[in-house]
Image (cartoon, rainbow, N blue to C red; front, side, top):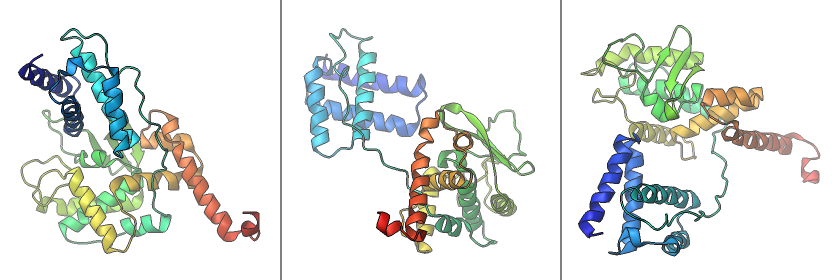
Length: 310
């Protein structure tokens, strides 16, 4: 396979991922980087000529360089898929990635804020300026309903209906619930707390001051366009630092905080699973570990014999 032909196959594979599998731009970008790593390792050799020992050596090199197990697993998945597709285009003796296992992943607990810090972060005072009002509504909603930040930015204004627009989510203020479309286009309905509802209502009064061409997005940037995931991340991090929260706060931390705090109060793992939109309860069970950490701290701080027993 010539260099030109090889580049053509790589471009064709990326096009398949984009058009047939409908992967997000972020995922496409990650796949391109992973394939570039494979090309750099090949150093001019035909990718179709690489064998099991080559891929295993590449995996070992990246592991030795400090690449974490999750990233290595993602690269192996990308390469395996590429070779599976390439075998349909050219003759391959075997998929060189088959049988190669990634290093063992270390299980880390999701980081959640304490209740006091979480409440302090979202409980901003009412403001008559559009941007602070939007921020307050977004933070309240992330913590109130455990939304992913991608689900938050996809929300539309509920009372705007147009036949040429398909909404991925909206808030029903009357029913106090938010309708979202999560991973795998799975839809769910999650309750919204009173402080979040109040914050959203306040924001809607100021939203027209930023509104420009597109009438649908619930949350707008200062330019009047649908707010981006990155901008929400930057605003939240900056605000957390400004009020003295030491943790590196990001939107998903509010989702973790929502899950662990609801679980601490209710003990209902199945309900938390439904509200988070997890397909498997195994993904939700990690929060039971967070709950135990909370119990252990209470025990250590309050039980008269805690120090002796430990």
